[in-house]
Length: 344
Image (cartoon, rainbow, N blue to C red; front, top):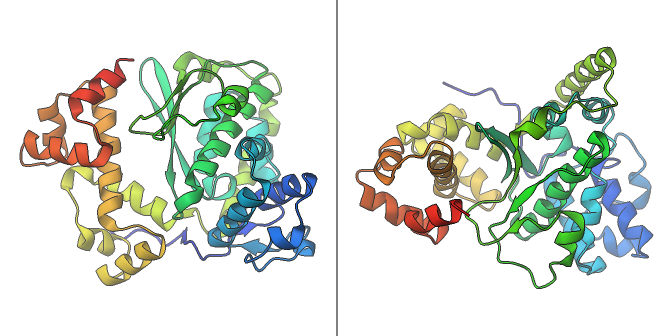
């Protein structure tokens, strides 16, 4: 089946400068950063920031983020940026978030409106009987800026839930990275339930916290805001990135072990074109396929309690030994070591 072409790529101008980029620019200017140095390489001028019609590509935004990181040279930069992101200044999309009935509805809207609210990292919400899990996948080839954006997005969700729900929630934080030397900013902006050297980056929360009603909801106004937010997304002309579209297709077809040719056909392009586009985003089909297989394996281990043999069979590996070898290549851990981590 061919997928509709409603995606953006790393060089597609689809991010309104007066929204998230402006928040980062304002943060930098408030700390005395020179605007010319900050905007170098972005093709932007300071007067462009106030123009509602000015749009930049994800690649331009990443150049801005790289400049900001270098010039700010502070451990709290990503967290302070994250404080400004949600509900943010995205018109109807932000209003819909601000009027959500509860955290679950807000997170579902964040996923639905990700092209507007989270264009560089795609959020996914998973639920089991006891917990909610929120994780992100790279939408645009983030490279060295992934950590900055992950910290910012985690902070944004935690700050939004506190601001709109009026309470501190028992978030648990999982990071693939090793524990940083300067961990104080994590304690201040996220909390103390931090877990590093994990095979994934995600937030975990008791599921019961998702449906506690938020005090500011007006049902009729919230419904209108959601309608207008969906119209805003439609007017943008793209609903997700190319990488996001491929990742979701791989999730749906993971049991068929699809190859590059299958994916290219689904995306209505030649295998050579898909390879070229993925290379442009700093990735490959094998890397994307392995990433999705790892996520599915983690889901089956943690949420379904599958054994090694059952996970290997589900992912169409020839035998459990071959799967264990691949799993260790993906994570640096054997499945047995992962089970110990999941028990903590």
